[in-house]
Image (cartoon, rainbow, N blue to C red):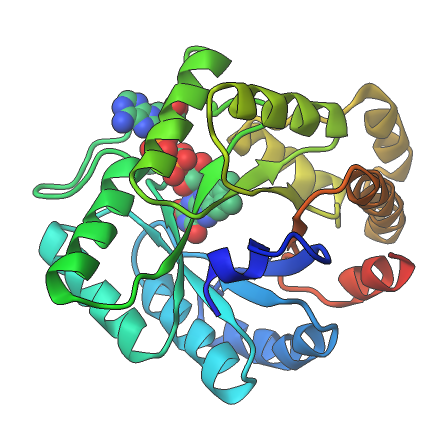
Length: 292
Ligand code: FAD
């Protein structure tokens, strides 16, 4: 099933999980144990991220294919513009299609560590709207059934964007290029999401906007992630997390409570779905899904 089909009726909220490919073969072992546990929780689909460079990229397709073809669960491959020429993108898209995967999360990707700006690869793309456009053009040239395409949205503004207005205008380009849904960056205060949706609707963006929630697993980890993606931690949550310090179990309990609180409020507001960044673990998401 493709993204637009999930959201066309506006029925029950669509629940999705996001996992990432491990860096090493050894790292695959725990993930292979966790995938059936995640599948058993019954999300509508699971997406698999695309590593910045190198070895994890082929694992995106390997893992997504396993979810789709062995566990018979719907999935999406993330795909970025990083390091790929147009011909290479065509080759990756061909392999995704051959694996019967019908959905893509289309992204630009981050600049390599240490670089402030994103330098497009030779004969490649500078922005996600160009990647979406490329996918749509290729489909129509080949007469293929279209992929379901999701793109990223940023309730607290993308870290490089000079203003929210400009970021929303750029988001609109991605939708106009042919994306079906928007999945947001993680946030810990629902107000950012509600404001973002309002601004997007005012700008004429009509596709479903799916909030992305990340349950905190450790204080160190969430500080690293938020410093990279620009999401803020509200003061009260910050204080709670300080009381956990290096105690990951306590941090995870705080994270689960926070995630349930946010998810309940979002569901009460009638969101079309929730995308959980599950960080390749199952215990915490099991508790969250059970509570919801
Ligand atoms: P873009 O939409 O290209 O936006 C990047 C910046 O450029 C923004 O500031 C935007 O305002 C501006 N901009 C956009 N279009 C234009 C334009 N046409 N002209 C001028 N300016 C423009 N990263 C990975 O490496 N792998 C993943 O699998 C991955 N998955 C993600 C999933 C989700 C749901 C989210 C929210 C993020 C994900 N990321 C992933 C991170 C993402 O790659 C980074 O946030 C990246 O910095 C921006 O990607 P983008 O697709 O939003 O880029």
